[in-house]
Image (cartoon, rainbow, N blue to C red):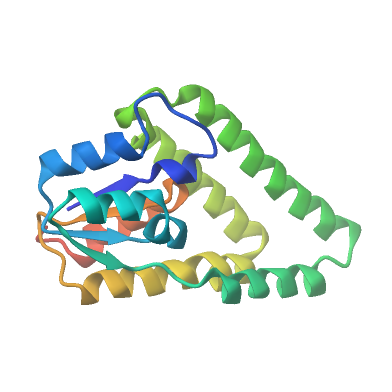
Length: 184
């Protein structure tokens, strides 16, 4: 089982890594099931292209982001009440922008988008966020991902299944899939 990043989650264009390229690659891989983890991909161009051009079963594993966005907003409303907390939040925002800026220059193709370098940067980002805002990371990030992985597992993935996720979520799913489905 593989986890691939969606092109819509990159925040930039990467030559040769767009919806037609992803659908073409998936066609060659012949997955039995494709699990889509992002609402925008399921409802958008990628989901439509997959339904029109692939014979794979497509399972929507996305979550309604509203409850998580609300949790995040409420967290910041109650937690950012000191200059130190505001600096921490700004630091996290700066790191996020810096990671995407760096990666937009690094990504050249399929392999660089879906690379350990990409995964490592997002893994490090989320470890930092967890160390600074533990409650936020668990209530916003881990809670979403737990629901997504539960949906994937209930869809009975096989070794021929593919997960298409956001580029940032990819590392989390790769790490969990190894532990949750060791036989794949």
